[in-house]
Amino acid sequence: MTNSNYLKQIAYTMLLREGIRYLPLNPVSLVRRKTYRLKSYHRIAPPNESPEVIVEKYGNAFVAPSEDSKHDAPYILGVNTSCSKLEREWALLHELAHIELGHVIDIMSYSGYDEAKNAMENEARALVFFMACPDVILEHLNVMTANEISIICNIPYKEALKKAQYFKSVGYRLNSLKPESPLEKRLVYMFRDYIENYHSKKHMQWEISTELCF
Image (cartoon, rainbow, N blue to C red; front, top):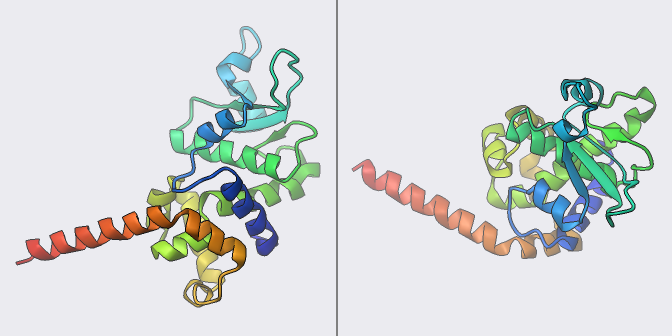
């Protein structure tokens, strides 16, 4: 997770711009809101060929500039609908990260198949963690374990584990004590109802579990 401050700024600005007020982030909703075109690999695969051909080349998703003059959509996103919902949505978030970073002048894919695009792939992989799992919101929720992150952010456990390891590497507890930037404060304000409701539910669950112990 390199250039974290730069990538956080991009991610948090995107969340504010789109009016995101709760987790998990819904990539399909974002795609539709932005009027991007979304197609399953089954609809893209050439006649008499399996969508697995596309999966082998591009992974579970790709994004490319749209060349369809009939639709006012700057990008087309292809997605493998045969994989799990979690993997599919994580791959779509990765492609949305490419768009936010201004990478999409050619076809980009979750697989990182082209070695010449490795730097952009790594940047998108890092950005998607700040989009889907914003540090400052997870800090306010007091969420830090891979299991908690996976559930709250609705992402694959293997990706949540990377986020938990990142928190550990930057000193999660100490980092949470640092003053928040104006951008972070704006994001927390946007999520204020979600954060309050989350803690209310946690407190209620604690009270119920306490009562059951007696």
